[in-house]
Figure 1 (cartoon, rainbow, N blue to C red):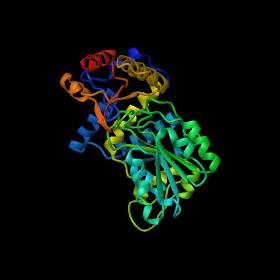
Figure 2: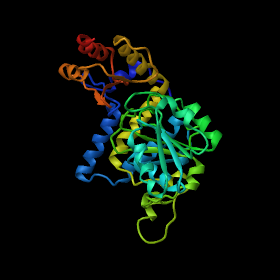
Figure 3: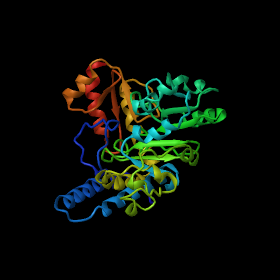
Figure 4: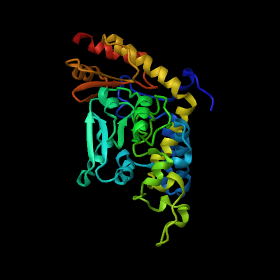
Length: 350
């Protein structure tokens, strides 16, 4: 797909000024919004069958695969990160040891924790100690590519190298990364991404990569009609013919979520993740500079500035508070004016 210049994509959103909260949810680009409205209109009057909506699931799968350098045959669809990770957690042997960051979002913690009754142990360490903690005895490293609360970007190549040295599986939650941070599945055993943040899709469309190794190890315990080799002959009866590859791990998709997801993911492809990264980091670092903070490699800025939450609320700026700190996040529809408005609101506190 050709790259699109900033002047071409800047008019695809209509945000109210002051939206600095993509780390909570992204705003839909116009093609995604219009596709969703059209599908809802058809649904309201029964104008079509469901198959045209489901074509968006295939488009989403293929677009995601291209974005992360995967084969579409190794990509599955679902609705939540935690449900997508459940088959992997169930496949762990009794007594397995899982390593994670001690501030990891719980969607990548609870699926492992609920296995503790059979001896699975979950160990959390501070992010800066994670690589050193990858040593013999660790069976799986489960961590986010970008941390939700702090915005810290994982040193993924180093984590992969350390994990492979001891034979540990690498399971990455890319929900706060894919869409603005270039990454591929090379060396990763599982990459699961909810698309409603940086991929600007409706909540309910989750996509994931499973390595061929994990596809063999895991049981598709949530298999239903949509995991069949031919979904149209999998509606009834006791005969089961599951799809090859990762599609056997598909959960029946929420159609309208994928109707919105497909054009949003394809737009990210068109613009280019590197272009998005450059735009996001420029604004995030302008904001950091205005607060007297050093530059960073993250589109998420976390600050403990006292009174910041109240100052933002008074100025009409929408951000989030996570782990007691103000969290601001910057994406395609964020403008320099948004940054200046945010800094003006915080200036009396500095």
